[in-house]
Image 1: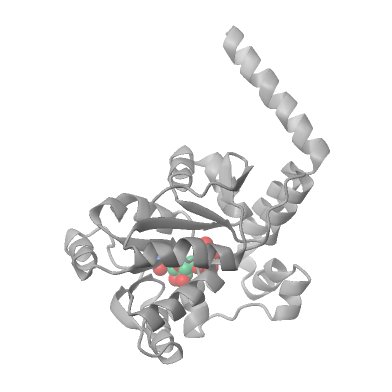
Image 2 (image 1 turned 90 degrees about the vertical axis):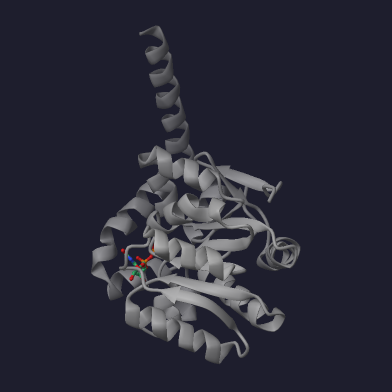
Length: 261
Ligand code: UDP
């Protein structure tokens, strides 16, 4: 799979610059039809901040075929940088489109991640919502997902789509560790999307999304997300043009003084 050519770089991460419909019709569906392999990361500000703190994770994200802008913070940052991305592409929406397309075209899906109840219910709901959906298998996210027997089970099922819902970092790292064992498949980290699909968690009502307040809705529902919100705030601050410029100068000076040493 080749990298998408149109991209906008935010903190060394190349975000795919396209619309949802072009991404699906020109990239994702053809990849499924051609039985190619493809690694999709849906990245929000937190993921970008995490790539600054974990160099190995940064390499993992950079190795993806597509890094989609999931999170209004990414879109706003690219606007501030004067290179706006075309549109926000939400991971949970991509997941639904993929499930619909898979059901219509006979592609099979493996569901990995979330609590056992949520995983089971998510698969049941997916089958109900998308009649004819072929389930290649499923596994909750609290088992040993590095167990060789489990990996063999997934590889031998030859899924067309592998959805991994383990939360950021864990899911992308799992994909990076095992994607080479497969000869085809669309691999995508979907965060808490199984919890939404199963009904265990609710997505923010559309009015909150429209006013760019999805993060606040999730924070109210799950106050432990405060650390993430702070990270997203840190990300936004780094993209206010003046702060961005000061950061660049500091980095430049730091590199120069390192060279002198
Ligand atoms: N999860 C899991 N195994 C773990 C840790 C988390 O399966 O060891 C699941 C968790 O049950 C939840 C999802 O990963 O369904 C993470 O959801 P979250 O909303 O935190 O994802 P993010 O915000 O990172 O997209």
